[in-house]
Length: 225
Image 1 (cartoon, rainbow, N blue to C red):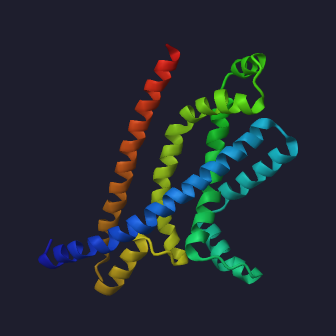
Image 2 (tube, rainbow, N blue to C red; image 1 turned 135 degrees about the vertical axis):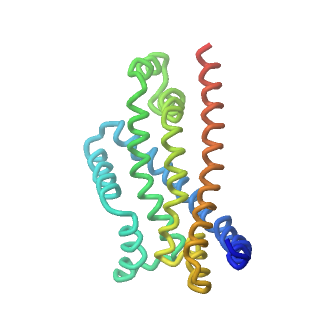
């Protein structure tokens, strides 16, 4: 690697990592937080077996999972203005990523909810708990324990998916890299650099995932005793 490339990578690192800290990570965390709320609500709707609401939830999941996220971004950011609905780039990205990930996470949560033995729910009712208490004290805590690993994987995947937001002019890490490439004509070195930064962020999140799983395992062992 020649001196020019080394100097370019050193100079571009800060210009790439700053949008990562100020745009990519906030976009990921905000979107995933909303996605979790959507997922829990949608999963509970399906779990309650209210037919009309369940069909609406299934339709939402079908559409969100069955269409590419890039197309969804284009529909919201470029398509909705035709109907007079103008959304700024960052809120549009949050909306799309939240709804898209919410559909996938809803299926994860639904499977986790259905894994709870019916006997535990019946026991909750037998000791005088109402539906809300059964859900918050018995069902959801155990469901979150089951769903934690796949939800963590979804969070890590979302970090990488945020690069698609560059297509609707969100200045995150990938768009910052594209601008540097357009100026320097060094795509290989710069795209490898941004890939390594994504890898670094994903590795850190993976460490947090393993730490969280260990803590949950310890908590579960304490409860069993």
